[in-house]
Length: 229
Image (cartoon, rainbow, N blue to C red):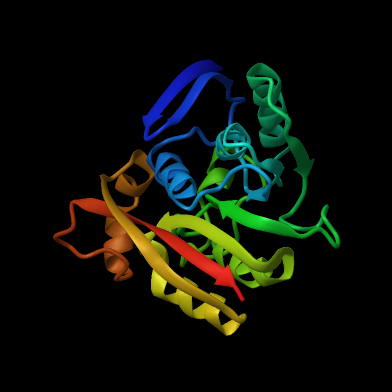
C-alpha cells in the first residue's frame, strides 16, 4: 500500500509504503512528532525509535537532522521502514528486534516510542497479524512497562524519553515506574481524540473493567516525558 500523510505540525511524508498488518501513522504518531520538534530533537543527536512501524517517527527525526536507529519485532514493519527510508532518501538504520535485543551496549540521546498500548482481552499480545500493532495485554502495558524499564539502560546521561500512549493504559503508572528506575518523568501533553475502530469494538469490555467511564465519548492520549540524570 502506498499513500501520503500530512499530519500537520511539520509532520509530512510525501510518499510512504505500508505493508499489510503494519500500523499506519495517525493521531498518536502526529502527537509524538510534535513533541519531538518542541523538545529540539535534531542535529547531532543519536535517536532510537522503539516499535517503529512504518518508520514515520524515525524518518521525522532524520529530517530534523538526527542520526536515527529504529527497531520493530515485526519483520513486515522492518521491511516497511527500510522501504520508506529509501523513498525519502534519508539514512535510517532499521533492525528486527524485540526492543533492545539487537542493540547490546548501544546508547542514545533520545528514545521515542509509540508502542502497542490498547487493553485487550488476551493475556498475552498476539505474535502475528494486524492486532500485534495495538493489542498490549489486559492493562495495555505489555510493552509500556518494558520500555519504562529499558529507557535508563539505553539513554546517555541527560538523555530524553518521549513516549505516547492512551490514558486507558494508566499514565500515572508509567510516570511512577520510570521514576522508580531513576529518571525524572511527567505527563507533558494530553489530547482527546474520537474513539477509533479498535476502541469502539471494545467499549463494553473497557467500561466493565473500569478502564473507561460510562459517559466518556473520547479517548485521551498522553505524552510521557522522562529525563535521565
